[in-house]
Amino acid sequence: MSDPAVSVDGLVKAYGNAVAVNGISFDIAPGETFALLGPNGAGKTSTIEILEGYRKRTGGNIDVLGFDPGRNRREFRERIGLVLQSTALEPELTVQETITAFSQFYPLPARIDGLMTTVGLADQRTKRIRTLSGGQQRRLEFALGLVGDPDVLFLDEPTTGLDPDARNA
Image (cartoon, rainbow, N blue to C red; front, side, top):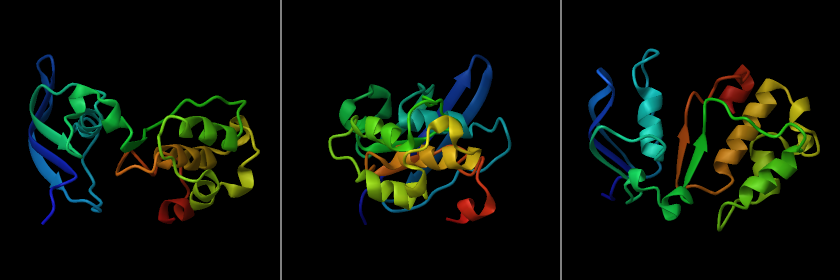
């Protein structure tokens, strides 16, 4: 059995006296799809942000792809992809310009043409972000999460803004 891609042991996150994440533990195998489910305020986003390295944990041990996300290393960031709950993008750029700009952050980015096809935006490549529907903007956010050809992709509220067909795709 290979090492897990993500390993969480006793993760705790407190905001003052309020404990948002209380000692959770789990492992995610390479290639596995894993979902955190729970009501609003259950600590799902806090957990994801800690795994991404954007929020500090109060306690516990974490390993993502052999890295401690809290150490903020470039080698770690180059191997993960993020699809946040919402993303502010430059409205005057086109779909292709936006994906191309984000691809510059990675040493071995995905092929942009193939990525636009994968997320269903090939026909919108020259459209400005401001002209896209909410669902098309969400597809663009998925493309930006995938542009670095990540080993681990973090999705926070991934189906928000997508129609049923897009959710299934």
